[in-house]
Image (tube, rainbow, N blue to C red; front, side, top):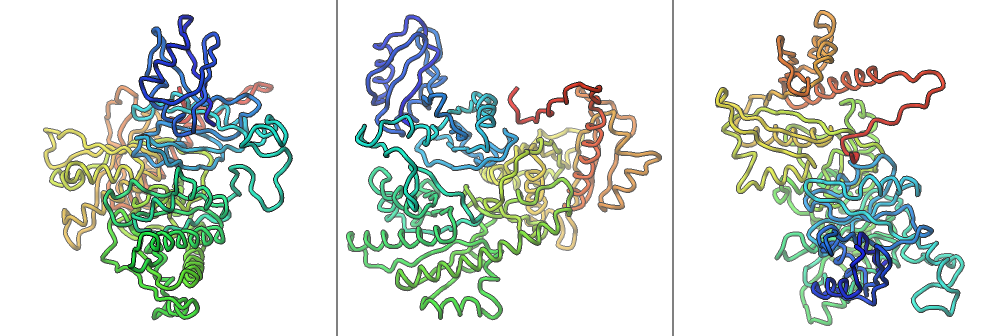
Length: 587
Protein backbone atom coordinates (compact mmCIF):
# COMPACT_ATOMS: atom_id res chain seq x y z
CA UNK A 1 0.00 0.00 0.00
CA UNK A 2 2.78 2.44 -1.00
CA UNK A 3 1.30 3.96 -4.17
CA UNK A 4 -0.07 7.47 -3.74
CA UNK A 5 -2.74 9.41 -5.59
CA UNK A 6 -2.09 13.18 -5.86
CA UNK A 7 -5.26 15.05 -6.72
CA UNK A 8 -6.51 18.63 -7.29
CA UNK A 9 -3.65 19.47 -9.66
CA UNK A 10 -3.98 22.50 -11.92
CA UNK A 11 -3.31 22.51 -15.63
CA UNK A 12 0.10 24.13 -15.08
CA UNK A 13 1.31 21.35 -12.75
CA UNK A 14 4.37 19.50 -14.03
CA UNK A 15 6.46 16.53 -12.99
CA UNK A 16 9.23 18.96 -12.05
CA UNK A 17 6.85 20.74 -9.65
CA UNK A 18 5.98 17.49 -7.92
CA UNK A 19 9.60 16.40 -7.77
CA UNK A 20 10.46 19.70 -6.12
CA UNK A 21 7.71 19.35 -3.51
CA UNK A 22 8.78 15.81 -2.59
CA UNK A 23 12.49 16.62 -2.77
CA UNK A 24 12.27 19.67 -0.49
CA UNK A 25 10.67 17.49 2.17
CA UNK A 26 13.11 14.61 1.70
CA UNK A 27 10.34 12.22 0.64
CA UNK A 28 11.84 9.33 -1.32
CA UNK A 29 9.85 8.37 -4.40
CA UNK A 30 9.93 6.81 -7.85
CA UNK A 31 8.99 8.51 -11.12
CA UNK A 32 5.70 10.45 -11.21
CA UNK A 33 2.91 9.45 -13.60
CA UNK A 34 1.18 12.74 -14.42
CA UNK A 35 -2.39 12.82 -15.77
CA UNK A 36 -4.80 15.69 -16.33
CA UNK A 37 -5.68 16.98 -12.86
CA UNK A 38 -3.99 14.19 -10.90
CA UNK A 39 -0.83 12.08 -10.66
CA UNK A 40 0.49 8.84 -9.16
CA UNK A 41 3.78 8.10 -7.44
CA UNK A 42 5.27 5.07 -5.67
CA UNK A 43 7.00 5.39 -2.28
CA UNK A 44 9.61 2.86 -1.12
CA UNK A 45 7.61 1.85 1.97
CA UNK A 46 4.37 2.53 3.82
CA UNK A 47 6.06 4.70 6.45
CA UNK A 48 7.23 7.21 3.82
CA UNK A 49 3.83 7.06 2.08
CA UNK A 50 2.03 7.91 5.35
CA UNK A 51 4.52 10.70 6.05
CA UNK A 52 3.86 12.16 2.58
CA UNK A 53 0.10 12.11 3.21
CA UNK A 54 0.47 13.72 6.64
CA UNK A 55 2.71 16.61 5.55
CA UNK A 56 1.29 17.28 2.07
CA UNK A 57 -2.44 16.51 1.92
CA UNK A 58 -4.48 19.64 2.57
CA UNK A 59 -1.37 21.58 3.60
CA UNK A 60 0.69 22.27 0.46
CA UNK A 61 -0.40 24.45 -2.46
CA UNK A 62 0.70 24.11 -6.08
CA UNK A 63 -0.28 26.88 -8.49
CA UNK A 64 -2.97 28.09 -6.11
CA UNK A 65 -4.54 24.67 -5.49
CA UNK A 66 -4.23 22.67 -2.27
CA UNK A 67 -2.94 19.16 -2.93
CA UNK A 68 -4.98 16.09 -2.03
CA UNK A 69 -2.71 13.14 -1.30
CA UNK A 70 -3.98 9.69 -0.34
CA UNK A 71 -3.29 6.03 -0.92
CA UNK A 72 -4.15 4.93 -4.45
CA UNK A 73 -6.60 2.04 -4.44
CA UNK A 74 -8.33 0.83 -7.66
CA UNK A 75 -12.11 0.50 -7.40
CA UNK A 76 -12.05 -3.29 -7.67
CA UNK A 77 -9.63 -3.46 -4.73
CA UNK A 78 -11.63 -1.18 -2.44
CA UNK A 79 -12.49 -3.25 0.60
CA UNK A 80 -14.45 -2.98 3.84
CA UNK A 81 -11.34 -1.59 5.52
CA UNK A 82 -10.45 2.09 5.89
CA UNK A 83 -7.48 3.86 7.41
CA UNK A 84 -8.37 6.95 9.45
CA UNK A 85 -5.50 9.37 10.04
CA UNK A 86 -4.95 12.73 11.75
CA UNK A 87 -7.03 11.75 14.80
CA UNK A 88 -6.39 14.10 17.77
CA UNK A 89 -3.62 12.40 19.76
CA UNK A 90 -5.32 12.67 23.16
CA UNK A 91 -8.51 10.89 22.05
CA UNK A 92 -8.98 7.18 22.49
CA UNK A 93 -9.36 5.68 19.02
CA UNK A 94 -12.56 3.78 19.88
CA UNK A 95 -14.30 7.02 20.72
CA UNK A 96 -12.82 8.94 17.82
CA UNK A 97 -14.33 6.57 15.28
CA UNK A 98 -17.25 5.17 17.25
CA UNK A 99 -18.81 8.59 17.43
CA UNK A 100 -18.84 8.91 13.63
CA UNK A 101 -20.43 5.74 12.30
CA UNK A 102 -23.57 3.66 12.65
CA UNK A 103 -22.46 0.17 11.74
CA UNK A 104 -20.67 -2.74 13.31
CA UNK A 105 -16.92 -2.54 12.85
CA UNK A 106 -13.62 -3.54 14.41
CA UNK A 107 -10.56 -1.41 15.13
CA UNK A 108 -6.85 -1.88 14.70
CA UNK A 109 -4.69 0.94 16.15
CA UNK A 110 -1.46 1.59 14.23
CA UNK A 111 1.91 2.39 15.73
CA UNK A 112 3.28 5.40 13.81
CA UNK A 113 5.79 8.14 14.41
CA UNK A 114 3.25 10.89 13.64
CA UNK A 115 1.94 13.23 16.32
CA UNK A 116 -1.65 12.34 15.52
CA UNK A 117 -3.25 8.92 15.87
CA UNK A 118 -3.94 6.44 13.06
CA UNK A 119 -6.41 3.54 13.13
CA UNK A 120 -7.59 0.93 10.66
CA UNK A 121 -11.35 0.32 10.72
CA UNK A 122 -13.00 -2.76 9.21
CA UNK A 123 -16.72 -2.46 8.39
CA UNK A 124 -19.20 -5.25 7.90
CA UNK A 125 -19.89 -4.37 4.25
CA UNK A 126 -18.26 -2.42 1.41
CA UNK A 127 -21.23 -0.07 1.18
CA UNK A 128 -20.82 0.83 4.84
CA UNK A 129 -17.14 1.56 4.25
CA UNK A 130 -17.98 3.72 1.22
CA UNK A 131 -20.54 5.77 3.16
CA UNK A 132 -18.16 6.11 6.10
CA UNK A 133 -15.46 7.30 3.69
CA UNK A 134 -17.80 10.02 2.41
CA UNK A 135 -18.84 11.15 5.88
CA UNK A 136 -15.47 10.99 7.62
CA UNK A 137 -12.98 12.26 5.06
CA UNK A 138 -12.26 15.89 5.91
CA UNK A 139 -14.50 15.84 9.00
CA UNK A 140 -13.23 18.40 11.55
CA UNK A 141 -12.64 16.82 14.97
CA UNK A 142 -11.30 19.32 17.52
CA UNK A 143 -9.48 21.36 14.82
CA UNK A 144 -8.10 18.19 13.19
CA UNK A 145 -9.36 17.30 9.71
CA UNK A 146 -9.71 13.51 9.52
CA UNK A 147 -8.04 11.87 6.53
CA UNK A 148 -9.53 8.61 5.33
CA UNK A 149 -8.38 6.23 2.63
CA UNK A 150 -9.16 2.70 1.53
CA UNK A 151 -6.92 -0.21 2.44
CA UNK A 152 -6.68 -2.51 -0.58
CA UNK A 153 -8.63 -5.75 -0.65
CA UNK A 154 -5.78 -8.26 -0.51
CA UNK A 155 -7.78 -10.96 -2.27
CA UNK A 156 -8.58 -8.60 -5.15
CA UNK A 157 -4.99 -7.38 -5.22
CA UNK A 158 -3.74 -10.96 -5.42
CA UNK A 159 -6.14 -11.64 -8.29
CA UNK A 160 -4.68 -8.66 -10.13
CA UNK A 161 -1.10 -9.92 -9.80
CA UNK A 162 0.58 -12.18 -12.34
CA UNK A 163 0.72 -15.93 -11.72
CA UNK A 164 3.64 -17.67 -10.02
CA UNK A 165 6.86 -16.63 -11.59
CA UNK A 166 5.68 -13.01 -11.99
CA UNK A 167 6.91 -10.05 -9.99
CA UNK A 168 8.76 -10.82 -6.80
CA UNK A 169 7.03 -10.24 -3.49
CA UNK A 170 3.57 -11.43 -4.58
CA UNK A 171 2.06 -14.75 -3.54
CA UNK A 172 0.96 -17.30 -6.15
CA UNK A 173 -2.65 -17.34 -7.22
CA UNK A 174 -5.16 -19.53 -5.48
CA UNK A 175 -6.16 -19.81 -1.83
CA UNK A 176 -3.44 -20.23 0.79
CA UNK A 177 -2.65 -23.68 2.05
CA UNK A 178 -4.59 -24.89 5.06
CA UNK A 179 -2.95 -23.74 8.25
CA UNK A 180 -1.05 -20.85 6.69
CA UNK A 181 -2.40 -17.32 7.12
CA UNK A 182 -3.06 -15.28 4.01
CA UNK A 183 -1.02 -12.19 3.38
CA UNK A 184 -1.52 -9.85 6.31
CA UNK A 185 -4.82 -11.45 7.30
CA UNK A 186 -5.67 -12.01 10.91
CA UNK A 187 -8.24 -14.41 12.30
CA UNK A 188 -11.24 -13.08 14.15
CA UNK A 189 -10.23 -12.66 17.77
CA UNK A 190 -12.03 -15.14 19.99
CA UNK A 191 -11.24 -13.50 23.31
CA UNK A 192 -12.18 -10.05 24.56
CA UNK A 193 -9.35 -10.09 27.11
CA UNK A 194 -5.91 -9.02 25.88
CA UNK A 195 -2.68 -10.08 27.54
CA UNK A 196 -0.68 -7.16 28.91
CA UNK A 197 2.93 -7.57 29.98
CA UNK A 198 5.80 -5.33 31.02
CA UNK A 199 9.21 -5.71 29.38
CA UNK A 200 12.54 -3.97 30.17
CA UNK A 201 12.97 -0.97 27.89
CA UNK A 202 16.39 -2.14 26.67
CA UNK A 203 14.77 -5.22 25.06
CA UNK A 204 12.07 -3.34 23.13
CA UNK A 205 14.34 -2.86 20.11
CA UNK A 206 15.08 -6.58 19.89
CA UNK A 207 11.36 -7.41 20.14
CA UNK A 208 10.53 -5.01 17.30
CA UNK A 209 13.52 -6.04 15.17
CA UNK A 210 15.09 -4.30 12.22
CA UNK A 211 12.37 -2.28 10.44
CA UNK A 212 9.78 -4.18 12.51
CA UNK A 213 10.65 -7.58 11.03
CA UNK A 214 10.68 -9.47 14.36
CA UNK A 215 7.36 -8.17 15.64
CA UNK A 216 5.75 -8.88 12.25
CA UNK A 217 6.96 -12.46 12.40
CA UNK A 218 5.56 -12.89 15.92
CA UNK A 219 2.25 -11.45 14.76
CA UNK A 220 2.01 -13.82 11.81
CA UNK A 221 3.15 -16.93 13.67
CA UNK A 222 0.80 -16.41 16.62
CA UNK A 223 -2.16 -14.87 14.71
CA UNK A 224 -2.17 -11.93 17.09
CA UNK A 225 -2.07 -8.16 17.09
CA UNK A 226 0.67 -6.72 19.26
CA UNK A 227 0.94 -3.12 20.44
CA UNK A 228 4.26 -2.00 21.92
CA UNK A 229 3.62 1.23 23.79
CA UNK A 230 7.05 2.76 23.26
CA UNK A 231 6.03 6.38 23.81
CA UNK A 232 4.51 5.78 27.24
CA UNK A 233 6.34 6.96 30.33
CA UNK A 234 9.39 8.43 28.62
CA UNK A 235 12.54 7.30 30.40
CA UNK A 236 10.79 4.48 32.26
CA UNK A 237 12.70 1.24 32.85
CA UNK A 238 9.82 -0.86 31.50
CA UNK A 239 7.31 -0.58 28.66
CA UNK A 240 3.88 -2.24 28.38
CA UNK A 241 2.98 -4.58 25.53
CA UNK A 242 -0.62 -5.51 24.72
CA UNK A 243 -1.35 -8.75 22.84
CA UNK A 244 -4.79 -9.22 21.25
CA UNK A 245 -5.54 -12.79 20.20
CA UNK A 246 -7.06 -16.05 21.33
CA UNK A 247 -5.78 -17.40 24.67
CA UNK A 248 -3.41 -19.73 22.79
CA UNK A 249 -2.26 -16.92 20.53
CA UNK A 250 -1.55 -14.66 23.51
CA UNK A 251 0.40 -17.42 25.26
CA UNK A 252 2.46 -18.26 22.17
CA UNK A 253 3.28 -14.59 21.61
CA UNK A 254 4.25 -14.19 25.26
CA UNK A 255 6.58 -17.20 25.14
CA UNK A 256 8.21 -15.97 21.93
CA UNK A 257 8.80 -12.53 23.46
CA UNK A 258 10.40 -14.14 26.53
CA UNK A 259 12.70 -16.18 24.28
CA UNK A 260 13.74 -13.06 22.36
CA UNK A 261 14.53 -11.22 25.60
CA UNK A 262 16.60 -14.14 26.88
CA UNK A 263 18.61 -14.27 23.64
CA UNK A 264 19.18 -10.52 23.71
CA UNK A 265 20.28 -10.75 27.35
CA UNK A 266 22.87 -13.37 26.41
CA UNK A 267 24.08 -11.35 23.42
CA UNK A 268 24.42 -8.16 25.48
CA UNK A 269 25.83 -9.97 28.56
CA UNK A 270 22.87 -8.85 30.67
CA UNK A 271 23.18 -10.95 33.82
CA UNK A 272 20.09 -9.99 35.83
CA UNK A 273 17.09 -12.32 35.94
CA UNK A 274 14.30 -11.37 33.54
CA UNK A 275 10.98 -12.31 35.15
CA UNK A 276 7.66 -12.37 33.32
CA UNK A 277 5.51 -9.42 34.43
CA UNK A 278 1.79 -9.63 33.69
CA UNK A 279 -0.54 -6.65 34.19
CA UNK A 280 -4.04 -7.38 35.51
CA UNK A 281 -6.81 -5.16 36.76
CA UNK A 282 -7.14 -5.03 40.53
CA UNK A 283 -10.78 -6.18 40.29
CA UNK A 284 -9.54 -9.62 39.19
CA UNK A 285 -6.52 -10.04 41.45
CA UNK A 286 -8.47 -11.10 44.54
CA UNK A 287 -10.05 -14.00 42.65
CA UNK A 288 -6.68 -14.89 41.15
CA UNK A 289 -5.17 -15.14 44.64
CA UNK A 290 -8.15 -17.04 46.03
CA UNK A 291 -9.18 -17.63 49.63
CA UNK A 292 -6.08 -17.69 51.84
CA UNK A 293 -3.98 -17.54 48.66
CA UNK A 294 -4.95 -21.08 47.58
CA UNK A 295 -5.38 -20.34 43.86
CA UNK A 296 -2.02 -18.62 43.57
CA UNK A 297 -0.23 -21.31 45.59
CA UNK A 298 -1.67 -24.01 43.34
CA UNK A 299 -0.46 -22.21 40.20
CA UNK A 300 3.01 -21.88 41.75
CA UNK A 301 3.12 -25.57 42.65
CA UNK A 302 1.74 -26.78 39.30
CA UNK A 303 4.11 -24.64 37.22
CA UNK A 304 7.17 -24.64 39.51
CA UNK A 305 7.35 -20.86 39.58
CA UNK A 306 7.50 -18.12 42.21
CA UNK A 307 4.72 -15.54 41.84
CA UNK A 308 4.42 -12.18 43.60
CA UNK A 309 1.85 -9.42 43.13
CA UNK A 310 2.47 -5.69 43.54
CA UNK A 311 0.89 -4.13 46.64
CA UNK A 312 -2.32 -2.12 46.60
CA UNK A 313 -0.33 0.96 47.55
CA UNK A 314 1.19 0.98 44.04
CA UNK A 315 -2.19 1.59 42.40
CA UNK A 316 -2.88 5.08 41.08
CA UNK A 317 -6.11 6.83 40.27
CA UNK A 318 -5.73 6.40 36.52
CA UNK A 319 -3.96 3.04 36.50
CA UNK A 320 -5.75 0.33 38.47
CA UNK A 321 -3.50 -2.50 37.25
CA UNK A 322 -1.42 -4.73 39.50
CA UNK A 323 1.85 -6.28 38.36
CA UNK A 324 2.04 -10.07 38.65
CA UNK A 325 5.71 -11.08 38.63
CA UNK A 326 6.50 -14.69 37.66
CA UNK A 327 9.99 -16.15 38.16
CA UNK A 328 11.17 -19.44 36.72
CA UNK A 329 12.33 -20.99 33.45
CA UNK A 330 10.75 -19.83 30.20
CA UNK A 331 8.70 -23.03 29.98
CA UNK A 332 7.54 -22.64 33.58
CA UNK A 333 6.68 -18.96 33.14
CA UNK A 334 4.74 -19.77 29.97
CA UNK A 335 2.66 -22.37 31.84
CA UNK A 336 2.07 -19.90 34.67
CA UNK A 337 0.92 -17.23 32.20
CA UNK A 338 -1.68 -19.63 30.82
CA UNK A 339 -3.03 -20.38 34.30
CA UNK A 340 -2.99 -16.76 35.48
CA UNK A 341 -4.79 -15.48 32.38
CA UNK A 342 -7.27 -18.35 32.58
CA UNK A 343 -8.31 -17.07 36.02
CA UNK A 344 -8.43 -13.47 34.76
CA UNK A 345 -10.62 -14.43 31.79
CA UNK A 346 -12.95 -16.44 34.04
CA UNK A 347 -13.30 -13.41 36.33
CA UNK A 348 -14.00 -11.17 33.36
CA UNK A 349 -16.70 -13.51 31.99
CA UNK A 350 -18.35 -13.72 35.40
CA UNK A 351 -18.35 -9.94 35.68
CA UNK A 352 -19.87 -9.54 32.23
CA UNK A 353 -22.63 -11.97 33.16
CA UNK A 354 -23.30 -10.02 36.35
CA UNK A 355 -23.26 -6.77 34.41
CA UNK A 356 -25.83 -8.08 31.94
CA UNK A 357 -28.13 -8.93 34.83
CA UNK A 358 -27.82 -5.34 36.03
CA UNK A 359 -28.06 -3.72 32.60
CA UNK A 360 -31.18 -1.84 33.68
CA UNK A 361 -29.44 -0.31 36.69
CA UNK A 362 -29.31 3.06 34.93
CA UNK A 363 -31.47 3.00 31.78
CA UNK A 364 -29.87 4.33 28.61
CA UNK A 365 -26.34 3.79 29.90
CA UNK A 366 -24.10 1.31 28.10
CA UNK A 367 -22.27 -0.29 31.03
CA UNK A 368 -19.89 -2.00 28.61
CA UNK A 369 -18.50 1.41 27.71
CA UNK A 370 -17.77 2.44 31.30
CA UNK A 371 -14.04 2.01 31.53
CA UNK A 372 -11.97 0.65 34.32
CA UNK A 373 -9.40 -1.01 32.11
CA UNK A 374 -6.53 0.51 30.22
CA UNK A 375 -7.21 -0.86 26.76
CA UNK A 376 -5.77 0.85 23.74
CA UNK A 377 -4.58 3.68 25.96
CA UNK A 378 -2.64 1.84 28.64
CA UNK A 379 -2.30 3.53 31.92
CA UNK A 380 -5.65 5.25 31.54
CA UNK A 381 -7.90 3.29 33.84
CA UNK A 382 -10.54 4.49 36.23
CA UNK A 383 -11.66 4.64 39.74
CA UNK A 384 -15.12 6.03 40.21
CA UNK A 385 -14.22 7.41 43.58
CA UNK A 386 -17.84 7.83 44.58
CA UNK A 387 -18.64 4.21 45.15
CA UNK A 388 -18.04 0.79 43.68
CA UNK A 389 -18.42 0.67 39.92
CA UNK A 390 -20.91 -1.63 38.26
CA UNK A 391 -19.52 -5.14 37.88
CA UNK A 392 -17.80 -5.98 34.66
CA UNK A 393 -17.34 -2.42 33.51
CA UNK A 394 -14.03 -2.56 31.68
CA UNK A 395 -12.92 -0.43 28.76
CA UNK A 396 -10.63 -2.12 26.32
CA UNK A 397 -12.43 -5.42 26.96
CA UNK A 398 -15.85 -4.14 25.94
CA UNK A 399 -17.39 -5.41 22.72
CA UNK A 400 -17.96 -2.71 20.12
CA UNK A 401 -21.46 -1.40 19.66
CA UNK A 402 -22.88 -0.21 16.41
CA UNK A 403 -25.01 2.87 17.15
CA UNK A 404 -23.30 5.74 18.93
CA UNK A 405 -25.32 7.77 21.43
CA UNK A 406 -25.66 11.47 20.83
CA UNK A 407 -23.50 13.86 22.80
CA UNK A 408 -25.08 15.54 25.83
CA UNK A 409 -24.19 18.73 27.68
CA UNK A 410 -24.40 18.88 31.49
CA UNK A 411 -23.53 21.83 33.70
CA UNK A 412 -22.23 20.59 37.06
CA UNK A 413 -21.75 23.07 39.91
CA UNK A 414 -18.82 22.57 42.30
CA UNK A 415 -17.49 24.62 45.23
CA UNK A 416 -15.43 27.52 43.89
CA UNK A 417 -12.59 26.53 46.21
CA UNK A 418 -12.39 23.11 44.47
CA UNK A 419 -11.57 24.49 41.00
CA UNK A 420 -7.81 24.15 41.56
CA UNK A 421 -8.16 20.51 42.59
CA UNK A 422 -10.22 19.68 39.49
CA UNK A 423 -7.83 21.48 37.15
CA UNK A 424 -4.66 20.16 38.83
CA UNK A 425 -1.10 21.40 38.50
CA UNK A 426 -0.64 22.99 35.06
CA UNK A 427 -4.02 21.55 34.07
CA UNK A 428 -2.81 17.96 34.30
CA UNK A 429 -5.77 16.55 36.24
CA UNK A 430 -8.49 17.99 34.01
CA UNK A 431 -6.56 16.82 30.91
CA UNK A 432 -6.25 13.31 32.35
CA UNK A 433 -9.91 13.32 33.30
CA UNK A 434 -10.92 14.44 29.82
CA UNK A 435 -8.87 11.69 28.16
CA UNK A 436 -10.06 9.06 30.63
CA UNK A 437 -13.75 9.92 30.28
CA UNK A 438 -13.53 10.79 26.56
CA UNK A 439 -15.45 13.98 27.28
CA UNK A 440 -14.93 17.70 26.82
CA UNK A 441 -14.54 19.30 30.26
CA UNK A 442 -14.28 23.05 30.77
CA UNK A 443 -14.48 25.31 33.81
CA UNK A 444 -16.71 28.33 33.19
CA UNK A 445 -15.71 31.82 34.23
CA UNK A 446 -16.67 32.85 37.76
CA UNK A 447 -20.19 34.22 38.12
CA UNK A 448 -20.07 37.54 40.04
CA UNK A 449 -23.56 36.81 41.39
CA UNK A 450 -22.51 33.45 42.88
CA UNK A 451 -18.96 33.49 44.20
CA UNK A 452 -19.38 30.23 46.11
CA UNK A 453 -19.90 27.97 43.07
CA UNK A 454 -18.28 27.43 39.69
CA UNK A 455 -19.85 25.71 36.73
CA UNK A 456 -18.15 22.77 35.03
CA UNK A 457 -19.32 22.22 31.44
CA UNK A 458 -19.23 18.54 30.43
CA UNK A 459 -19.94 17.46 26.86
CA UNK A 460 -20.04 13.80 25.82
CA UNK A 461 -22.28 10.73 25.46
CA UNK A 462 -23.93 9.13 28.52
CA UNK A 463 -20.97 6.87 29.33
CA UNK A 464 -18.57 9.81 29.21
CA UNK A 465 -20.88 11.82 31.46
CA UNK A 466 -21.05 8.95 33.95
CA UNK A 467 -17.26 8.61 34.12
CA UNK A 468 -16.45 12.33 34.21
CA UNK A 469 -19.10 13.26 36.77
CA UNK A 470 -18.27 10.23 38.89
CA UNK A 471 -14.63 11.22 39.02
CA UNK A 472 -15.49 14.83 39.95
CA UNK A 473 -17.77 13.66 42.80
CA UNK A 474 -14.99 11.36 44.00
CA UNK A 475 -12.30 14.06 43.77
CA UNK A 476 -14.33 16.45 45.90
CA UNK A 477 -14.68 13.77 48.56
CA UNK A 478 -10.99 12.83 48.43
CA UNK A 479 -9.88 16.45 48.75
CA UNK A 480 -12.10 16.94 51.83
CA UNK A 481 -14.42 19.57 50.33
CA UNK A 482 -17.15 17.64 52.13
CA UNK A 483 -16.98 16.30 55.67
CA UNK A 484 -16.00 12.67 56.42
CA UNK A 485 -19.62 11.75 57.17
CA UNK A 486 -21.14 14.19 54.70
CA UNK A 487 -22.49 12.86 51.41
CA UNK A 488 -21.32 14.63 48.25
CA UNK A 489 -24.34 16.28 46.71
CA UNK A 490 -24.00 18.52 43.67
CA UNK A 491 -26.35 20.49 41.48
CA UNK A 492 -26.48 19.60 37.79
CA UNK A 493 -28.31 21.46 35.04
CA UNK A 494 -29.45 19.99 31.76
CA UNK A 495 -31.13 21.96 28.99
CA UNK A 496 -34.40 20.72 27.52
CA UNK A 497 -36.56 22.14 24.71
CA UNK A 498 -39.10 24.53 26.21
CA UNK A 499 -41.98 22.60 24.65
CA UNK A 500 -40.79 19.44 26.47
CA UNK A 501 -40.55 21.00 29.94
CA UNK A 502 -44.18 20.21 30.62
CA UNK A 503 -43.54 16.53 29.91
CA UNK A 504 -40.78 16.51 32.52
CA UNK A 505 -43.11 18.10 35.05
CA UNK A 506 -46.17 16.02 34.17
CA UNK A 507 -49.81 16.73 34.87
CA UNK A 508 -50.05 18.34 38.27
CA UNK A 509 -46.33 17.66 38.82
CA UNK A 510 -46.90 13.90 38.72
CA UNK A 511 -43.88 13.03 36.54
CA UNK A 512 -41.38 15.16 38.43
CA UNK A 513 -42.63 13.76 41.75
CA UNK A 514 -42.24 10.21 40.46
CA UNK A 515 -38.71 11.08 39.29
CA UNK A 516 -37.80 12.33 42.74
CA UNK A 517 -39.25 9.28 44.47
CA UNK A 518 -37.51 6.89 42.07
CA UNK A 519 -34.08 8.55 42.06
CA UNK A 520 -33.87 10.17 45.51
CA UNK A 521 -32.65 13.30 43.72
CA UNK A 522 -34.31 16.71 43.88
CA UNK A 523 -35.59 17.58 40.38
CA UNK A 524 -36.74 21.14 39.75
CA UNK A 525 -38.02 22.86 36.62
CA UNK A 526 -37.96 26.54 37.66
CA UNK A 527 -41.14 28.42 36.81
CA UNK A 528 -41.24 31.58 34.67
CA UNK A 529 -38.02 30.75 32.84
CA UNK A 530 -37.20 32.68 29.69
CA UNK A 531 -36.03 30.19 27.02
CA UNK A 532 -32.53 30.81 25.68
CA UNK A 533 -31.64 31.54 22.04
CA UNK A 534 -32.10 27.82 21.26
CA UNK A 535 -35.54 27.78 22.88
CA UNK A 536 -34.29 25.66 25.78
CA UNK A 537 -34.92 25.86 29.53
CA UNK A 538 -33.06 24.47 32.52
CA UNK A 539 -33.91 21.40 34.58
CA UNK A 540 -32.06 21.31 37.92
CA UNK A 541 -31.00 18.01 39.51
CA UNK A 542 -29.57 17.99 43.02
CA UNK A 543 -28.34 14.79 44.65
CA UNK A 544 -25.51 12.34 45.21
CA UNK A 545 -23.78 10.74 42.26
CA UNK A 546 -25.96 7.72 41.50
CA UNK A 547 -29.25 9.52 42.17
CA UNK A 548 -28.15 12.36 39.87
CA UNK A 549 -27.13 9.92 37.13
CA UNK A 550 -30.39 8.02 37.32
CA UNK A 551 -32.38 11.27 37.17
CA UNK A 552 -30.38 12.49 34.17
CA UNK A 553 -30.97 9.25 32.29
CA UNK A 554 -34.70 9.24 33.10
CA UNK A 555 -35.07 12.80 31.85
CA UNK A 556 -33.19 11.93 28.67
CA UNK A 557 -35.60 9.03 28.19
CA UNK A 558 -38.53 11.45 28.40
CA UNK A 559 -36.88 13.77 25.87
CA UNK A 560 -36.20 10.89 23.49
CA UNK A 561 -39.85 9.90 23.69
CA UNK A 562 -40.92 13.50 22.94
CA UNK A 563 -38.59 13.63 19.93
CA UNK A 564 -40.00 10.39 18.57
CA UNK A 565 -43.53 11.73 18.90
CA UNK A 566 -42.50 14.95 17.14
CA UNK A 567 -41.41 13.05 14.02
CA UNK A 568 -44.07 13.27 11.28
CA UNK A 569 -45.82 10.04 10.46
CA UNK A 570 -45.30 8.93 6.82
CA UNK A 571 -48.35 9.00 4.60
CA UNK A 572 -49.47 5.68 3.07
CA UNK A 573 -47.13 4.61 0.29
CA UNK A 574 -44.51 7.22 1.19
CA UNK A 575 -40.86 6.33 1.62
CA UNK A 576 -39.82 5.78 5.25
CA UNK A 577 -37.96 8.76 6.77
CA UNK A 578 -34.17 8.72 6.75
CA UNK A 579 -32.50 8.00 10.11
CA UNK A 580 -31.95 11.12 12.21
CA UNK A 581 -28.33 12.21 11.93
CA UNK A 582 -26.34 12.12 15.14
CA UNK A 583 -24.17 15.04 16.24
CA UNK A 584 -21.19 13.02 15.09
CA UNK A 585 -22.40 12.77 11.50
CA UNK A 586 -20.68 15.01 9.02
CA UNK A 587 -22.71 18.00 7.93
